[in-house]
Length: 209
Image 1 (cartoon, rainbow, N blue to C red):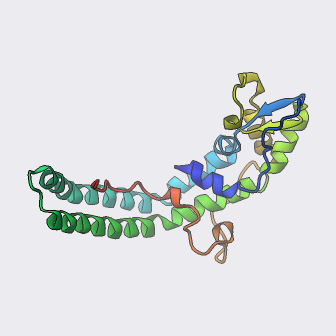
Image 2: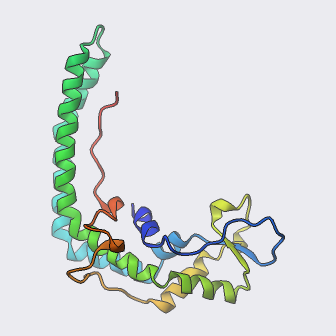
Image 3: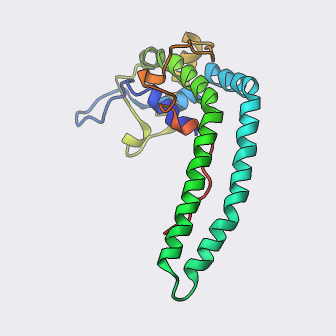
């Protein structure tokens, strides 16, 4: 859930693309994982879960209620769709009703979790501000001249992964962060809390077509 949020906050961080040249000191690192494993992020998440427990509990309760409400509608839709000579117009009406209720519920869940999303995005942005420095420090200490993302390497030995070293540098550079953004702060300079969509509660199931 948090990796999309982290990825958005860390977008400017430079991790080299593969080079055709033979380069000594090649390593791999996953910057998102480095942040997720940092002490600052773990502490921030713990604080958020405590500070916003009421909102999180409300969102969980509402999500459960929505799933219970939609389940019989989805089952009825699936049964009607599987019937011989299914009525397409009726199926469209059923699907539309389910989708409208789902959209309404998702909007409510987003409203309930907005403070949580905002706090997570603020914490991620503060850590992300130090990530390039952490990457550079880890590369210097490990004498790495070319750093790749794991997915960019065809094959890599575990010893070439310096993600943990990047995390260690983050722990040194940014031991803790605030989870209370200023009143006028917006994630990534965007309007609203939509910059952290992955922090929202999971969506109820939508019937297939």
